[in-house]
Image (spheres, rainbow, N blue to C red):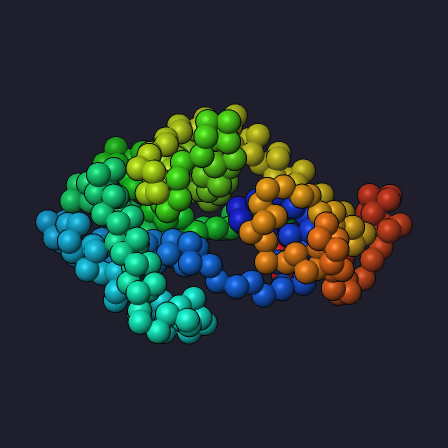
Length: 281
């Protein structure tokens, strides 16, 4: 049994979306925005391969075309984003937008003064309940005195204050995993929003992460119950407009695929454990 911050967020956003992605594994079209985010992350990761003095904005921007070629080689389907761009104008504009995001980062952090302990770090820890939490952290900085900072790059804009807690959920998730795995409480969580040029920081305390752990356990029980009963309810929001699965969603007149797992309504009612395998999530 395992859970990542993205899948946890999917279920909180819309249980039916979680089912489509995790149970049915329905394909989704790549989007220019998400792919640009992947490209920018790759550039910022690779920039730290060069000596500190060479980590300049022109050097980082020069990495963009090569990292796009590398990304395209690994995922040829991304070429479909610009299938109708015979003259290459759309691709050039899109790459220029990626370069602008990379350049903005230099006004928010100084990479010549940073030596990350880890980049694109996969972490996984098991809770006492048996639930495994896993994810990939963009950057981990460790001070000479041992304090740990977890950094995440966002290529969009910073959310309004009323939505700030949702944005920090992913970071607290990572902090909980690091705390369980390394027995070290991260000193700072830092979100770097390249789209708006904002940096949001949060210094967690044990009580914060204990609350996140309880929330994740409650969330997982809800996922288990939905898996056993096959009841995955849609939760319509403004985000539905960007969903690839409207054709299968009852909110848009669609019908979900035939449920591929066995259904045990009696087990769900009396609280007994389901039979979901460890590879389901």
